[in-house]
Structure formats: C-alpha cells, structure tokens
Image 1 (cartoon, rainbow over the protein chains, first blue to last red):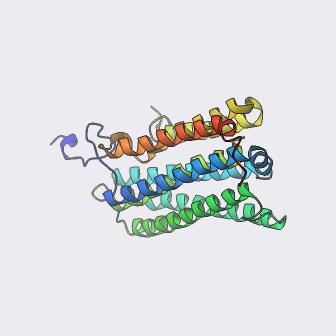
Image 2: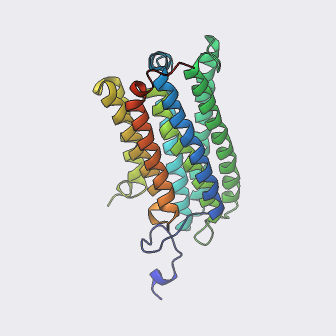
Length: 199
Length: 96
C-alpha cells in the first residue's frame, strides 16, 4: 500500500489543513495575545506622553542580556518543533532529548532575568521608579510567569516522552504544550524590541 | 537539500539573523523614527514566521490562521501608528 495513504496527517502533508494540538489551547492563546496586545499598545501610548523619560530609562537596561534571552527562546521553540518532528518520524528517543534542550533554555531565560532584576534592585530601581519601569517590571514579570508555566508544561511533556508516549500516532499533547510555548516566544519577540530597543 | 535549509530549521536561522539585524538597526544602523519603524517591522516579520512555521498555522484551517495572523497585523499597525504619531498628537495631554 502506498505510504502516502497510510501516513498520519502532519505538517508535511501540505494539502491537509490541520490545527495542531487541542483546539482549547488556541482559545487560551488568543485571549493571551489580545491581553498582551493591549499592554503593548498601552506601553507605546504612555511612552508618547514621556518620550524623553522612556528613552533615558531604557538606556539602563542591558541589551546584550535581552538579545541572549531572545536567542534562548527562539532556540527553545526550535527544539520543541524538532521534538514534534522526531515524534512524527517515530524517532521516539530523540523526543525527550530535544525537550530537555528546550527546558534548559527556558531555565536559562529565568536565570538571566534573575540577574537583570537583581542588578536593577541593587541600584534602587524598582516597579515604582517611574512609568517606564512600571511597564518594564509589570510586563516582563507577567511574561516570566508564562515562561515558568511553559517550562513546567515542557517538563511534564519530557517526562511523558521518556516513557515513549509520543510517536507518529500520538502527538496531540506534545503539540498542545508546544503551541503555548511558541506563544511565550511570540510575546517576547515584541516585548524585547518595545522595552529594550524602541526609541 | 541539507536539513538546515528546510522548514522549520531554516525559520530558526532567519529568526536569529533577524534578531541580529534588530541589534544592528539600534546600534548604529538607522536613527530616529526610521529605526523605530524598522525595529517594529522586524518584530512583525519574526512574529509571522513563528506563527506560520513554529505554531504550524501555515497549514491550519480558518478561522484560526486568519485570527492569529490578524492579531499580528492589528498589533503591528497600532504600534507603528501610536509610535510614529503619538508624541505629536498627545503633546497637549497632561503627563500622568
């Protein structure tokens, strides 16, 4: 029998339209995107009222650490995508390895954020310093909660993957967690330039 | 074709290059509002790649593909408009 007829629906079969994971996760993702979208626009709006203050405050942020964290999340997302690809190819043992890489990069993001916050607190900068830092701390802390939550989800997926649970016949749970993790990446793709770069 | 050139591995490479480009724009590439607009445009391109290739919405049915892509477009346009015209439009508004 031709392989094409028996292969499960996947991203490789371009003609089949398919939403990855549990459809419920997409309602959550949409709600999160709308909420953060409003935060982003509010940030740029408040910035318009105090452009000089925002530009000056932004200079105290460490752009290099921001870039490293961006690369961490992008690569973590790639690792999760590759874990799903491995599961679809029935390379069951590769799945937990890629998930472990994704988890390590998620933890790396948290460690860098810890050092960034510590450096700010050490020089007396906090959430209440000014409008820029209100946004900086509030937005990055809300995002960090999502990084922590997403990493916990990845650890659960990793544990299941070690038991060989994910293969070509079962990628649904993996895809559901992955979709949330990509959303965390997507939000940082905007947060980083808005807070660290936009002048 | 080498595996690195295929989706989504190619997407990851483009995202890394785009991140480097953002850094260059800010470091010494462009100045003023052009740099800001370029920074937002690069973020939008990166967001689109994540949505289509990582989230796999390129092969997802509507309305999901349109809804999430639409969110990206709406947010990008709003950010660009408020960034570019906000300071002059809100010049008379009392600071909070």
